[in-house]
Image 1 (cartoon, rainbow, N blue to C red):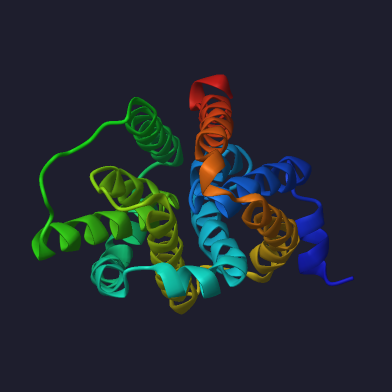
Image 2 (cartoon, rainbow, N blue to C red; image 1 turned 135 degrees about the horizontal axis):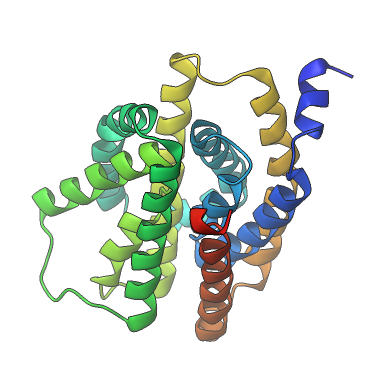
Length: 250
């Protein structure tokens, strides 16, 4: 057995990480988002934030294989291109900030972002204006910074779509494709920096398989008519994850 694999299997909390990524896959499959909001608070209890960011992006690419074909047909390609380009440009800034800031502070930032996003989603917050090209560029750029800094690729674009009257199916498709583009940008930047070692790549595999399976299950049970039930379940899982991940509870 390769040493890197042995190191990965010996990771403290690996069972918790597999369980968490499995739950996140179910949520991702039927909502199109939520993985990082569930996984990051738990994973940062066991891994350095840099490894968590890489894991989030790399496993996100794996799960997208199950969701992207249909989502690509349904998404707004012009809007997603604008968001994706802006995010790709700012990912290096987010990774740089992540390397400069203490892990505990980043954990508090991540929990705060998740908490605010969850509050906005649950309360049905709406911004009544319209975002033109500058606004979409700002949203994409913000998502790139936050994603690179914390691994939370979804919250910024989730809040953005709260302001949209677009139907739930198109929002889901747009979110899936945008997060895939952002995941690719993060993985690319981390790899060219040489910041990922073989043990992390094995962990990606160990987590990616159950994540892909549960994402497929979530996709199979997705039914727009049951949206309310799915959302309540997703919000509950996210809330449990963020509370359990608060540094004060260590």
